[in-house]
Image (cartoon, rainbow, N blue to C red; front, side):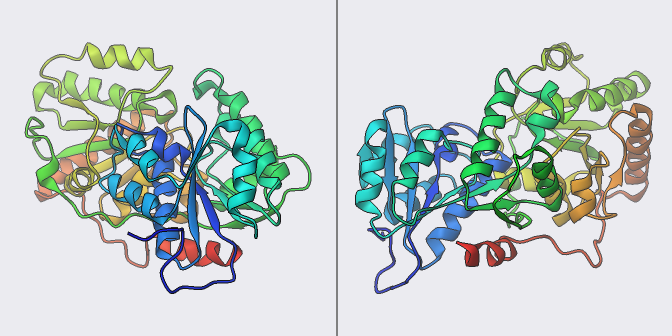
Length: 401
């Protein structure tokens, strides 16, 4: 294991990087979300680079700092797309510094005398306390990745208090960051609409798509699927518009009974979605709608590869990784017509407004019928399209750090 935040026999004139991994660790015992995966990608990239690297994590008791050895422990722990429930005690044992909140600034000044680059990609822990204490470090720079402005644009889909918390986060980022990273041009424009005057320097860098190996052996044996089947991925919360799909399957079930195609809802239950939860809890026993959570990355990829189509009627997305992952698998994508998909997927998806339930029904029926006729899943060749990679992302980001 490497220690002290640097690679052996490596020298660099660049300031040490301090990546905030608070959000990733907060996911202990749960499957990673899209934002969590971005934080994991930064963790991996910083470990793979020669610049001294450290991690900051807020805990219930204060803050801990990891060097490369501790960062490597966390990266290995979440490699399969989940964070072990007992990850924090392990990280505390590997911490090179542990301090209560009131001593954060003193610790940072002592450990980073020659400056640092603090990188926050998880929309977590960018508190005024952290910002103030970072500024006590000579030549400290603050870099923040902004995923979207959905809490401000769609407050009706947020959990209680989320909109106010995000507004405070965005204002703090815009007023204090030395560099903002936007995951898309759409996000850059959205931030400009909401931000106070005088935005800091910013760059647009599309997120990479993880190169996961399909692992059909990870699919639970209890999940008995009959091809053709359809899949959607994401937390079951109002913004994801699962009600659109349930309406379609109500209609399919009324017409076809148990012979209707299977629908997989892959994700945990979220918030403010009691009507959808009631519908899921009261489904007929033979209705082919399956709610499943906790799948590994490999299992999800195998299911995407075998699906007739990925269905994604979400009302709003910052980047929307599931359609991108489906595009990598050459699986048919049906999604709401959002600017972010036009930006990096172009004409690959079948676009359908989430408010047009009849159109969604027609598209699903057509895909189902064609799949029965062809006898294969919804595989399509994406000529001329290349998936965004993390290599491309970091080739834009790293020179700015």
